Length: 84
Image (cartoon, rainbow, N blue to C red):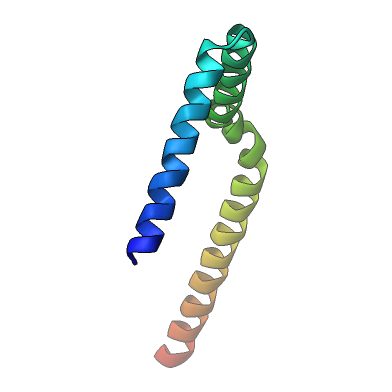
């Protein structure tokens, strides 16, 4: 287990060194723009998702409502039959 912890620590140190190098390097502005672009793409999902999923959610709700209506009709028929 100690070897695994040492491997993870070493990997973390490598990532920290790489981040430090990128942030000091001449391409810092480019990396910063890329990071911002990717971050906005990820967070933009929450703005775009409702429009993408709305038709599927509405279709599912229609199916659920239709199923509920059918169940109510069947229950009503069963109650009428049992009442006779």
